[in-house]
Image 1 (cartoon, rainbow, N blue to C red):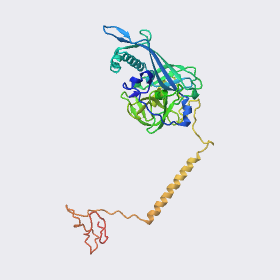
Image 2 (image 1 turned 90 degrees about the vertical axis):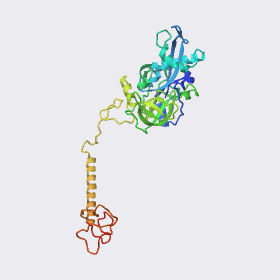
Image 3 (image 1 turned 60 degrees about the vertical axis):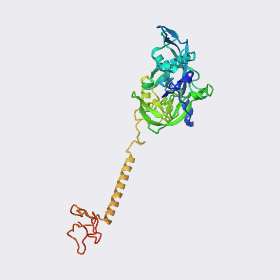
Image 4 (image 1 turned 180 degrees about the vertical axis):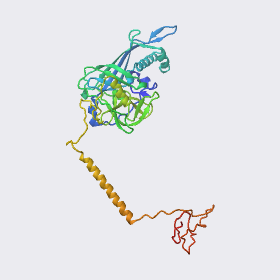
Length: 408
């Protein structure tokens, strides 16, 4: 299983340690992509830290100082004031700590201090300290939010984002960031329910593979697909499987339906498999955002019930006829139903006049005794006409094959 965050300096080690699995781009929806792209942002995550490890004799030492680890994710705007959703593992301190330790182990392997970075990872996770540039402090992590200039979106230059809250990868994999100085943002609406299997969708983000072959003004990629299944993690967290091609760097980007409503956050894929990709739960995403005081805009396709706010201050009212009088269409439907019923009754009557139904005759066994020969002794009914012994009849018939008389 590979999470979709990309840490550029760790490319050599991430694959054997459960890292990036590349995928190819697929077609985008041309009429929709221009507007959606204005709501999608790229996240550049940079952490500066020291790694302190124990030495022989009870001492300790630093790997080197300071260490810098950079990564990339995607995100999308959910409010006009700069609230941004991304994947939880993009900003989770424990995930960042792991990335820093991997970088430290790679450095020690290159300098011949250890033989294998992979073999040391589990020990380092349990016994090594990751701290800020001063002993005992927390590592400093900065998240910058950008958009390509050609998109014409609200992020005109790099913005530093504040991490408001997050859910870890195992608890839902969603995070909420906030940037200031944003105006004219076009927040994406969040769908009201999980997509049904077969629902068409588009996953959006900034793939790391694309970023390595183009200039710094990377545009978002749009990868189409459908919802494949609704699943639940071993810890009881609901997830949606999709077959749109996700890849490293797309973590935190939105997966939307045909109307541009967000169905979930791009989360992870199964390594060495084709199109087994997962996004976060739709209803959990909406609840998480609302818990932090953000009111998502109304879904673009969902009808509003009477009295329910549309998100722009308007409240729909119940529909009524323009004249305010009796709904004549109801009377027309009732008359039509009565006419159909009357016509059906007439047809039934005429049919039964032409073809009277004979009275039901009591059925008695055609053979007696325990044995049932193919053609044997039969019960002779009281109205048996002379000249026919009714012997040439198979079992179960109600009329004689020879004379046509009833056998019961």
